[in-house]
Image 1: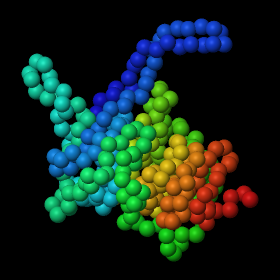
Image 2: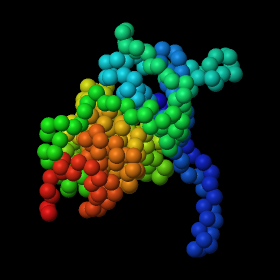
Image 3: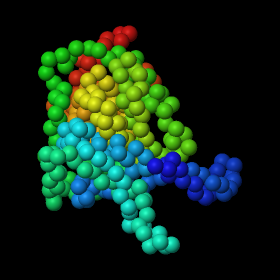
Image 4: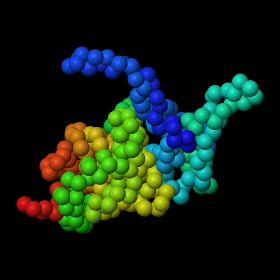
Length: 289
């Protein structure tokens, strides 16, 4: 995947009303392109994403949608030629925007309900799904049960994660236009950080990375996200067996309800030395207080 496709250069006009002044210059913006995911040659989903780590994204998407149980269910993942035609030879070019997944023998192909629209935008990964019941996918890795309330994560570690996530956002430094998701240990060590125009894509890239390394379930880890905590991100964390989801911004009501139901510790507004713990606070140590 060409690294230049993550950002693009565009001519802009900068206005400063305090000066006042205006000037034209070249700025870098985040690239947004469609990725079509096929399974066995059959179209399954289209998501608007930042190119890069597409195979991680596909693994994470299929797993968090409950279509595969582990990375072992996937035999191959390869890019296909897109619809663009090369004028000189009349052959389709590889646009790196179509990814075909071949499942291993014996793994059933996804059954797509016609009432469920798998087209997703960069801002919402569940748009068009028929109902809440259709997206309340059950995880192979339940978070409840014995040991749920045993404290093991120090609040000071959680407070350090937004800065650690921000430091790893190389593309954000150039564009200011990307979400990020990072997987951290309870000790605060970063395992992987991914950026994308879609927050759900960034999370899928992180989970897909972990799945391919046979790290699931991700007990003893925290998923840190740069924006808000939605129902969908909460579901994805649960599907990967991640016990703690922390966000810089607010959670939604459905995210809180789902986290409470499934045993996930949900933390929002992690800023400076403050945070709000919405569910299952027992996983957090006492801290300094």
